[in-house]
Length: 290
Ligand SMILES: Cc1ncc(COP(=O)(O)O)c(C=O)c1O
Image (tube, rainbow, N blue to C red; front, side, top):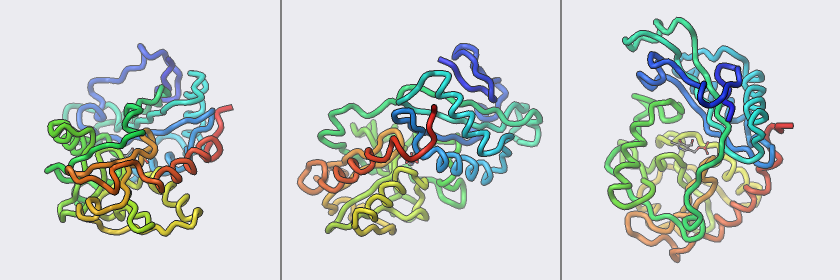
């Protein structure tokens, strides 16, 4: 495997960063998770936009243009002959000293792009659905670290995942300080109620998910009413359908929330339609590797 490290393709074993890199020392950096389907890097433009927005929010200057960054992704996929898989892009503040002050990272940012296989939930969960649990740990507040920044600091979500695991669940429902549903630990959450597709609004503390937005757009095209609003756990418990969305997981059904059976306890009909619609565009919208 070859890794794109600061624009140079290097063998995996040589793709190393300094222990003084502030991405490692402080989680000071941003990242993206991207899928490639049949040689098409799906919605790469949207991922690059979000990457640059996250970087701007933390005053991290990416040394190359968006166009060059797109080319670097194509280069990484091509070098690994990757036609179907997952791409992880990381940009850190770079090498500094042991203090946290980013102005001491004088050498500029470090970036790397890993083009690899995708790791998914086991197939049985796509067929039968997930059981998820609300956890005590809250999603970050916008006033502290805005959840729309896809930063390298994921401890908040990791603690939620640990808590879910401790309860015997694969995934957590994260709520915000006000008690409204935000998202899962690495996925957005959607429900269907009376034929309407609903998801928490961005202000509730969710990442502005590209899969979420794609699914909402597809629903509109299919004539399904969509609503973004603040939601409580009551909305989840009483939903007809529930599912998670994310680049890696795509659309995955949820059949139980906090031990309440959702709908008839089986993956929902609308989710399946949306999933089919999603798969019908993954090889066409994006940037081709060839
Ligand atoms: C916290 C969080 N929420 C939601 C998502 C889903 O976003 P996307 O659909 O853009 O992958 C992710 C995935 O990166 C995430 O890390």
